[in-house]
Image 1: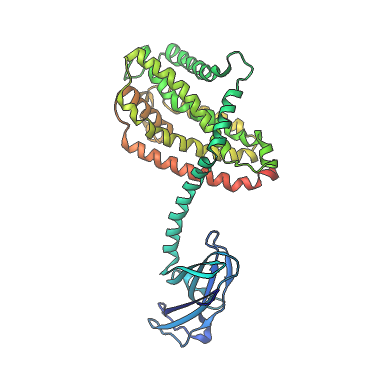
Image 2: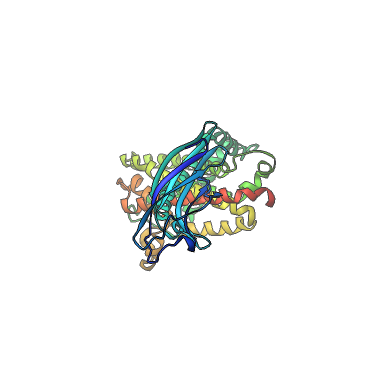
Length: 396
């Protein structure tokens, strides 16, 4: 191996049903790809087979791989092929995979193995999933100070100049919940089977509202968030992915204020808080992943579809009434339960009530499915935002 050359020795096996003849274009060669983007960098020279290969026969071969002078990592596919027809590795046949690195000292062999495109695809999928989950979390962690500062400014600035000031963060959800209580608890006389009293309705209703308040506030504002910060898109190098994170964190602040009201009511009505509230972090994590994933999706789409805010408001209202927050699950028609029970907030509302009011752990089956759906939406939402943000400046 010279400074930028790697010599690869291997055995070629004819696993087809026809004879490979050098004069028919059968040869061995290599292609060099960028491992990050799978972009073809070098299409190397071909070396004809030393002799014809009948089906099942094999022959030893050797190629010299000339690596580019640019520093970086490279992925090399060494494979048999037929000129102007196909590379055999692209048809699922085994090939030699070489990973190398070029730096100021020359070429360095990192690893080599015989594999197939199917096996490589599965490995790349697992690696991509790991990177896809790690990258958005890394963005949040690296910019945690910025996020904290912007959330504080958003919460405090929302009511700056008003008489109530920051207390509107508490009063707004309280007034909203009071309105729903009047309509459903007093006018429509809805009751929950776990506690059919009027005080019981208040507790079950407030408990169901807790996750919805955080989600609806963030999702309702998400379609406008990039447009509201258009100066960050055009003039500054700014981590735009953090804007939906700010909304999700601000929504969580609203939920925390509502949680204080609920806990006070729980102490007055029942004299204590059950130990099962220790399960709350296992509910908050998928709730935040779900909220953030949808906020990333809505924030990116809102740049291109300016009517999304109005459509989104209607969909959130519909989603709210399809979730058993203001009414008991038992009032839903049995035919609809099979569909409505797949609603992530159906699971969250039930789980919140389990740990706060029923004194039991949330059901494991729906919970692990909620975690799975939330994680997938988190990954897809960030990928969607990351892909579309490149053209934000052109659209805005």
